[in-house]
Length: 275
Image (cartoon, rainbow, N blue to C red; front, side, top):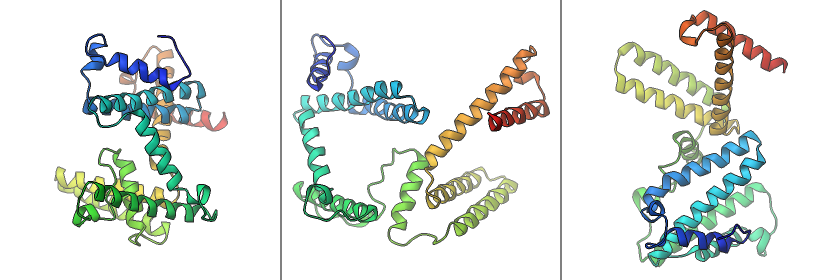
């Protein structure tokens, strides 16, 4: 097969890879569960390319992510459930339905109105899907305001989404200053448990602290996951600078003192400020 700009060719390639007789042995043995981790990984690689501002990589990573969609659709088609065309039809139907201010008779409104309309339509769609499956209306845990936040999300992202859902019904601090106070309170509890030596309790308090910080990021309109990725990159960059400086002296970090490394860290930090 030759490369092509036609999505149909990609679908044909996936069908060939999944052919039980002539396909790729690795591709043939996969199922939804085994492919799911790759789908998540590809989504992160898309985010990484965006974070780095690398549009060449973004082009490539978006292709990898699209392949994941085609892969899942092909496996579903083999089971007689749905195919790629059904996936496209479902998302186009959903997008038109959730944007009545663009494709319907509703007025344009503002961002908040658009978000509210999206959530209202989303809830209606969920109820319709349950009715189509002849399931009873949601009750208890399924009917919770917090329902629908995937457990598989990164913990920091899930914390932000859970707190946002709770905030939508008024369970929230009115001001960021109150969240900062909560962060300080949770930090004090971590310090208290550190003295007690109870590892399980300490882990719980560290979790509470991280949840409070995720809440603070939401209040400040900061993407906590993105902010932490940026800090990770900054830490890596500065530590590599320490390694390079020590390597120039014929040494490794293991052969340097903490004071020496902290001095080199300060130099790396200062050089970034003047760059």
